[in-house]
Image (tube, rainbow, N blue to C red; front, side, top):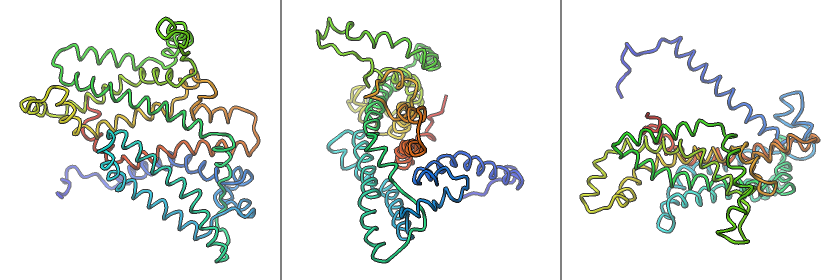
Length: 384
């Protein structure tokens, strides 16, 4: 690798200040996540202790016999490392095998869900049972106060798993519809040679800039009166869309689609048009060239765009809280409900545990798709 030219070398003071600023920013961004994660595994008296060391080590939690021994910490670290290795190396192999049976996107969904379920079972069911026997046999005492009782209360006693299922329905619906429409529209606009494509993209950008509340207000009367609107078509069984996930998916797709089209158009523009021409010469139709020649090259861009679509649907609060009823509520509005009501300290720690729970799928996604995200972003996703 060639050395950096002398004229482009940064002075030592600039490099040190840049490194210090980057380290400070990373610490500032990661600290809240780390701190609430630590709090969620403590009894309330430790979680809200004024002494930071008491929050980290949990003396009261440890005094109640709830904690991790040195052997537990090693085993848990090994499980995290194995999960990382499986995510980086094992999942692509699994998806490749599933590709012969199901579409690639569905294969990734199945593979990621299987890895996440396996980690939960291993970390919260199998490993604690095995380590409990080993710690008793060796007579080891806890070194770090840790308890998972708040997660058990959130997911099972408070039925937070239903909110998780609702979030997955909404998020996967948004991703699938956005990517299906976005890839076709982005490809068509990238290959169009007229000025009409430019003005369509400008109109989409203006639509994307509208406040979400404006779109919700516009769709709300339609969803509330959907039964009357659909009754001439579907008869007396016409459904009311208000309060249903389909309503949220429709609004979020409307919000997300301009951004998706812009990103995918940029990716398609970076793919040489000669590939299309070669496929056409070989006898492919336009759609066959798109499906069998262009799309295999586009997967990093599709995954990167799909991740942004996932984040929009997964983290949305305004649309989901206004359009969903209590039985279909997703995780983010449900957590807000935890914090907005009168609670005890135990309820507050459970709310923190719920907040930590929703970050786990995001870390898993980034860990699994890190290579595709990096290659997708460097392939021109931000090209104007």
